[in-house]
Picture 1 (cartoon, rainbow, N blue to C red):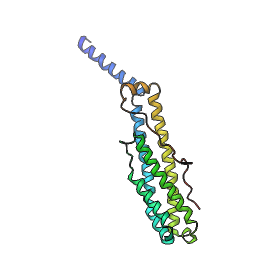
Picture 2: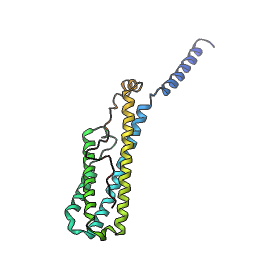
Picture 3: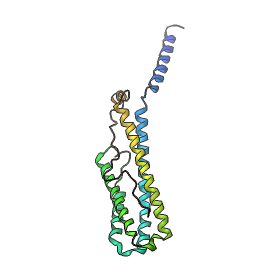
Length: 201
């Protein structure tokens, strides 16, 4: 093998070796973990939306038996409206103020639903209504799924943040991904917020 062709072969071999070394040293971890954070957040949003979708039917069912509880029903409707009006997507996930607003609105809806469930205790006919029982079961399941989705999101954020704060991720973050910030996690903003609200009777 002579001059130019040998040099080209060596360059090709060096390039392949470099690509192999880089792929094994975590250069892709940061964007991969970032995508996992975004995917985990999408699941959080999905579960909160599922809960929001249950609220109108729940309110209508309760209203049929407990019209005099208008104040409580109105509080649930208003809390749902606020919770669904604040959207945090992949583009705004890095905004701590927006994330806090979202969390607080969801907590307000959780509180309003808890108060509604206390009111239901006064209405035995409502408590035995099949439609209400089905909605109650769906709500309980959704609250559990919300708790799981939030836990998975927190774990994904922790993995991502750890990667960009430790070696060798810190180096790759400085050299290639400096525009990707430390991410905020989903903080509990009310007492016992990490636990799914109790909606069973």
